[in-house]
Image (cartoon, rainbow, N blue to C red):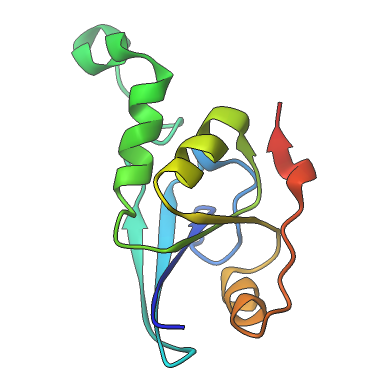
Length: 129
């Protein structure tokens, strides 16, 4: 594989977050010839715990779908998204954006290694209804 894998992480940037909308970061792994050559931690736009006053942000009037689209757009250079869990709309939006979505838990590095070895299975029970 050549490309990028985005992993939705918790505050530590190491563990996979169980909820796409509440996670603060994407950890993006650059893969060349099937091996990770570098990674970076990207702040995830508008994660659910960001402090602000809703009346100060006109973009909230566009609804949750708009925010989800911004979150997916932040990783538009990636081909794969690994997440510990996400709602059905976010899951569908990520797939529609051309991402291969893999739902799994654990540590980001371990999940990426397992994915590259063909050993990471997606658990669709992690899609929140």
